[in-house]
Length: 114
Image 1 (tube, helix red, strand yellow):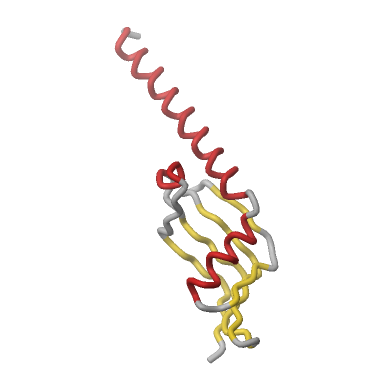
Image 2 (image 1 turned 135 degrees about the vertical axis):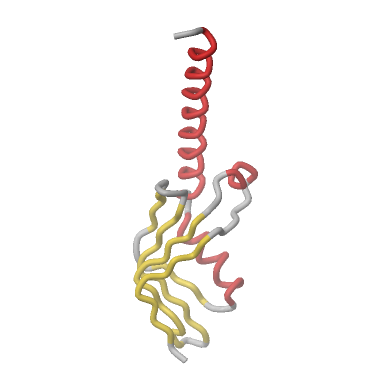
């Protein structure tokens, strides 16, 4: 192996290590009191009372995403919507600036009341 190819391989390894560290930091930031913070942020944004009765998890494949189970939205005491699972895709780089941007929202088994 030539010296330049060794250097490229070493830089690729360092870059991969940094990506793993950033992903671990993002998971740590997202998990701290995540459910109450998500409920508090989603409620005024949707102008409804949002509750997460199930689990909260963070996944990294295929991209960084947060998964919530048993999510309910109430307005005036009546349930307006519920979903068995909600997955929210989040870009990784804005998290380094403590900014959460939503890329995708995926709802499974959504129930709406009109």
